[in-house]
Length: 178
Image (cartoon, rainbow, N blue to C red):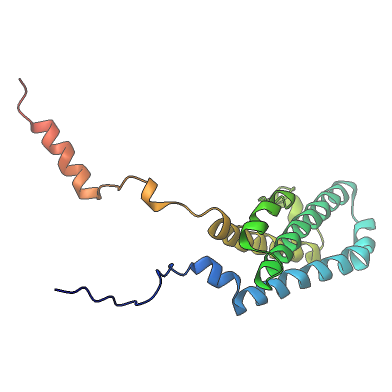
């Protein structure tokens, strides 16, 4: 009996969903959104935001300074990551080279610096920019984890189903004791 292969030819590697996503139209949209947010934030912080910050009471002015610094740092991390990934997508570097370069891009979760009450008293444009950057940061970190830190499912022991665990406990509880 002969063996018929459904996939003739050389061994085929499974397609990575994350790599496919990172090079798709969805990534291009994410890239434009990220770079647009960088530009919008810079324009606001250098323009209307500067005037709004001067009019704030001392406590809110300090919160404004903290949030604007965090916003800028968050967006620079996001922009660096997006530019690195775009270089991979355009063939300027390999995925392995990008992984090696990633140590220069400190992509980390940066939450708001202010408590909710103080943050709520900041100018609405700054609040909107901060919230948007946090959502974008979460999406980029998620994509980064999929691409560069995939979890090896084979390394994890299989988890017993809930009912199996309960049945094992019952068996142990009612097992004859010697």
